[in-house]
Length: 117
Image (cartoon, rainbow, N blue to C red; front, side):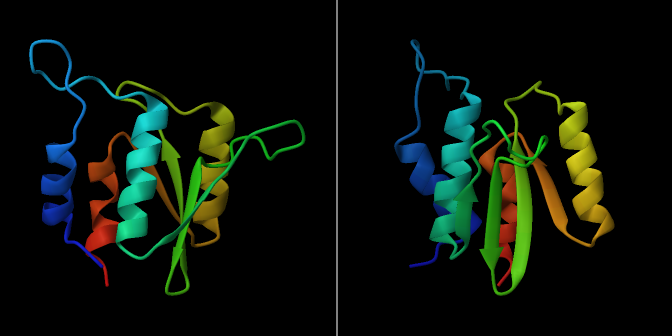
């Protein structure tokens, strides 16, 4: 089942995390990443989470998403977060080869992928 971006936002708001006093809690980078993974999977993307460890390519994006022959690299940051120089170098490298790279601070930053069919 596919949902539009608007339908998904409405779905997520029903179960969104609330802080004391009813205001929206600030999400961690991991929570943002999980929301992005879930949203893209709902939209039919195959999503891979990259684990950094010894021997990994420095700067590799947090996620890769694949659908209909298109691959997108997604680096997830919490609001106010910044890319390391390795991450900037990786972005420059993949974009120089024609790949799509998204620096995402929220699930809203991947809506353009959701609405593409």
